[in-house]
Image (tube, rainbow, N blue to C red; front, top):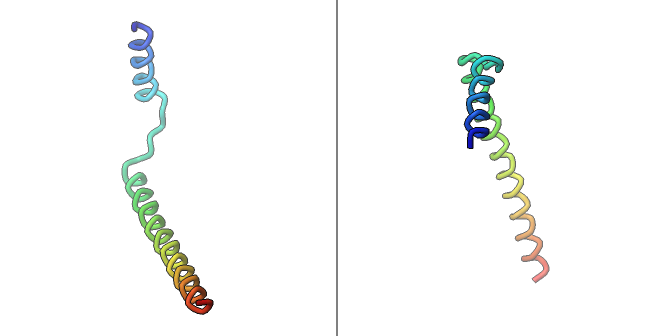
Length: 64
C-alpha cells in the first residue's frame, strides 16, 4: 500500500514539475479544430453511406 501512495505522489510531482503543458489558448484552438474535422469526417461518411445504401436498394429493386 505504501508503494502505491509513493507512486501517486511521484506521479503528481512529475506532472507538476516535468511536463510541458500546452498553453490554454492553443489547447482551445486545437480542440475546436478537432471538433470541426470530426464533424466534417462524420458528414463525409454519412454521405458515402447514403450513396451506397441507395445504390444497393436500386440494385435489388432491379433484380426483383
